[in-house]
Image 1 (cartoon, one colour):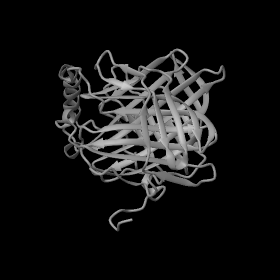
Image 2 (tube, helix red, strand yellow):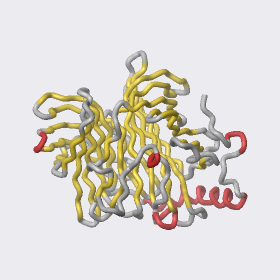
Image 3 (cartoon, helix red, strand yellow):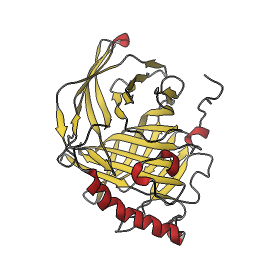
Image 4 (cartoon, one colour):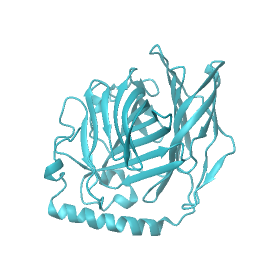
Length: 365
């Protein structure tokens, strides 16, 4: 590792970094006592507004902006509940503790504040809370350093990247206004980089097999340069990393009625050197997210196939970014973000970029 590349250290590097863009991402598969299945995604972003250069955020009058995306999926009823919060206000005591602690809310919600929490209550044990989930996540494996060192060269960009691939999960989810007890397994990614926004393409998978093997794999494309990577976590703690990975679309596509973007939803993933041959398919087809002028697909998967010659099955998550949209985003951006910008300027003028006093510090039941 080059001298200017610092090795990832825990718990220090679970905290925020002085960088252009950073995020804390969670996904998971859950089940209630009646056997009903659910899935979720929650991601909090931290961005240096001027340096990240996301087009529709360039006029936000603050240096560091936090924003959040979340998804809740009711698998049985094939219902999908996306949430895009263009600004998340963090509490004064966030990032001030020895272990990761972030307390945040979305001040643009008309119906009132929802307190959200990402807290490491003890080493590699987390409390995750948003408007749809309230969960305890316990890592049963050491962190997976993506690519081997946790510093990934994407040719046109470079990023620090680690994953917690097997988080034992218990807690509750809100379904049709009612909180329901659930158990399951979750995944966590943490990335940070000194890189600005570009129109790149990202086909990404997190896979959790029933044999306690987990795989993160992706194809990243930017300015004609492609990067392929797969990192594997084994039950005994071993980790393997491969640059020769094949992603083969299998023909099931879904076209968004809103953006007209077409997303390939079924894939075959092959790593010949380890005889990995898996097929993935969506549990719900309609899982599109819209963040200003950026559209992407994010959702849960079922996984079948073989690993090292033995039959395997499991679950996963897929993220598809950079798939062309024929939708005229100008109207969307104008309608949605004009109101957002007016609210942001109002908050800045009043000096109210701290959470209001009654939720100034953490609220955890």
